[in-house]
Structure formats: C-alpha cells, structure tokens
Image (cartoon, rainbow, N blue to C red):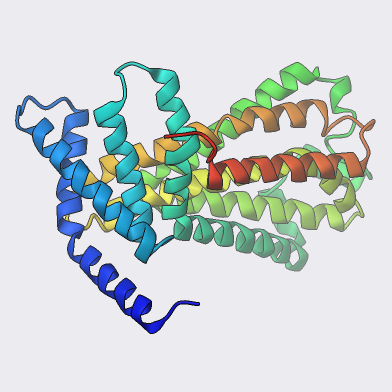
Length: 328
C-alpha cells in the first residue's frame, strides 16, 4: 500500500516532469533535424547530452507516472534517440524489429484516445446504417448494388458460389488490394484536417450496418456473419487503426502545439507510418482468409469464429504489447 509520503513524492516528481516539457520538445526537434542530416556539427553533442538527461527523466516517469501520456511520449523519444545514437546505419532488419517490438506499441498507447474515438465512430455508424435501412428500406440502393439486392431477394447471398467463378488466389489478391486501398485512404485523407478520415470510417460503418439490416429482412444475416467473421475481425481492426492514424494527421494540423504545422504534420506522418508498417501486412492475412476460408462452405461456423477471434487477438496483442521479450 502506498503511503502519504510516497504519494507526495510522486506528485512532486510529476510536477517537476511537467516543467521539463520544453526541454524535451527541443530535444525532439534535434532528433528530427538529425534525421534530415543537418550539417550543424554541434548537433551530435547536444543530442548526446540531451539523451542522457532524457534517460534520467524517463526513469523518473516510469516510477512516478507510469502509463501516462508523458511517460509514453518519453518512451517513444528514448527509442528514437537510442536508434539515432547507437544503431548501425543501414541495418534495416534491426530498425524494423524496433518498430514492431517497441515503437509501434508505444505510439498506439500514446494515441489510444484517437483509436477509441475511431472505433466508437465506426460502431455508431454501423448502428446508424442498421436503423436507416430498417426505417427506410428504399435506401438499400445506397449501400448495395442491383445484383446484390436481386440475389438477396431471391434467397441467397452474392457470395454464394463465389469460388466457382473466381479462383481463391485471384480473389485473395483482389480483396487484399481493395482493403489496403481503403486503409490508405482512411489514413491519407486525414491530411484534410481529419475530415476525409471521418468520412471513410463513417461510410464503411454505414455500409456494413446497412447491408446487415437488408440481409436480415430476408433471413440471411446469419449467413452474412458466417461469411465475414473469419476475415472481418482483422480487416476492420486495420481499417480502424488506419483511421486513428489519419485523425492523428488531422490533430497535428489543428493543434500543432509549440511546433509549426509543418513540423507537427511531419512528426505525425512519421509516427503513423511506423504503426501502419505493423498493421497493414495483416491485411494480407485477412485477404487470404477472405479468399480461401470465407467463401468455402466446407468450413463450419465454429472454425470461422476461431480463426477470426484468434487472428484478431494476435493482431491486437502485437499492436499493443509488441515483442517485450526482445532486448532494446
């Protein structure tokens, strides 16, 4: 149990760390300028000196305010500084390992509020799409093609017999391309002050909810769930991650803080890029599931649910926790 003395000490340390924010911002600017290979010969000395102070501050933050926004920010800066000072240039595999194991999880935790907002928006959009189609069935044409509507009205999903028309390999490649395109749009349109990202996330949620509501009217919502569950958990998770990173771009433009908008946007783009390096490859996995498992009637519902939940848990575990057993 923490005593009053320890509580007071932690509060004092937290207040002192708050006062250190300007120094950390200056060091962060040095890291960015060094990434651009500045010719200032004094920069390496200032970076090394600042990094030593950062290590001391991070140690205090881990003790006084673990899990806080400041703590996560310092962890990210430590990783960047360590990479800048100690890593051998050109070692791509080591760089990729650090991104997957440490940097991406720290960035996800630091932007957890944006991720929660994105998921909440997506879920609300699904619900709204469901309600709209139930209240105004004529709006179905906004979410489904004429062929899809005709097939559902005839008592079957548009996905039935899909493998008799398109080979799994071709289907997987097509779906991977489409899903990666949607995710890139969800991210990159954040450059329009986040509005483009909000549009993509809302539209996809409305479509999903609307299509489920439409199929439910003909008793086919269970079959649609059966088709989606194996690949959908990872696929929709990646789209939400890409959306959160898009909102990060928008936030950098709207609230750049002490940086210029250009500096804030450049940093947000770099941070988001490191997260997407980890997230986007999972769309390849989802595409394989969607091409080989989802349309194949030979796989029962329990197997599909197992695949969907297991892949989703692995995805989120890697994104949130990284590979903590590796040494930095």
